[in-house]
Image (cartoon, rainbow, N blue to C red; front, side, top):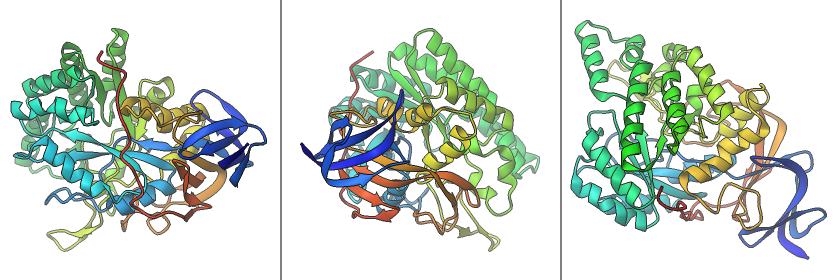
Length: 452
């Protein structure tokens, strides 16, 4: 039997095993895993790893909003993603106040049609309105079952009673509630005190966001979700105190997922003092001390943190009021995540190959409700990555593919690179060369097994 495509002779790494075998693809799906398969087209993966296509469940491509404009478009950002072995991403429809969820979603989907890879979106509910809450079931019925709620930021944060009502609505349709967990009121008071005292340096950005406030907001979000009966994802966890809250919730049987982003594991609070790149790292929640980094690594290893995402949203340098160039807050991780965690996770002995694949490829499919993605198995989408574990590259914006003039991980040398990326049986990247055109990405089907 001849298949349309065979990836031959690689070591298939999944979330629970490693095996040398061929992968046979027919059309857009994996049709066979075995030995001596034959294909109309064959890719030799001898000496390489063969992984499921990576999934990044937390990204920000450029939007038409007046503020918080990121510099990767759906075209440039998804080309970078494909070079990084990412075959599916979940962006965000950041619905503005006064706009219906449906209109905000439609606008974002129109922008996403330029994507090279498959995609979906989380719906950001930013308006403290029960009218917006009432729209949630209809949006979930359209195939978008995940909704994000901010507990911080003056223009985005929702009061607890609206978050709770929205969680109940998400629960009614078996979806996923997502929170940015920080205590807005106390952060704003600490910032006010810092301003009155003339404290404006990077250290005061950190002092206004202590880990205890992340833990408190995490505890509160978990309590609301428990009462509402909804599955919950905590975005970009950074603090050991917040990790303890997740562990306690799981111990009492609550369905909660934890996400960590690349920057919080690989960078520390000391990095915000860099005179050139530090301004890009003054985001919220903030980078923390090495002790918190160690707690995050441990939580990744034991599964308290389910997934690794990037919060990819890079910005180019701009001129400040003093005429000096600086980089607004945002990180560029979508192309580098697999390589960084292979280097500093797997090769450093902090995580196994299986856990690496689980956190970057398989578990994100579970958390984001992507039933056809995340596995090298018969019947799943033929999203595959051929990964060279020996290849090395020193990262910089010149060698990466995002539309940026600064890379978050400039100067870091990684070992292990995606060399070939396949999406639904189509070769996007071959031998580190772009082979497909943006616009071929497709809206990924989504759903969860059912209500809790």
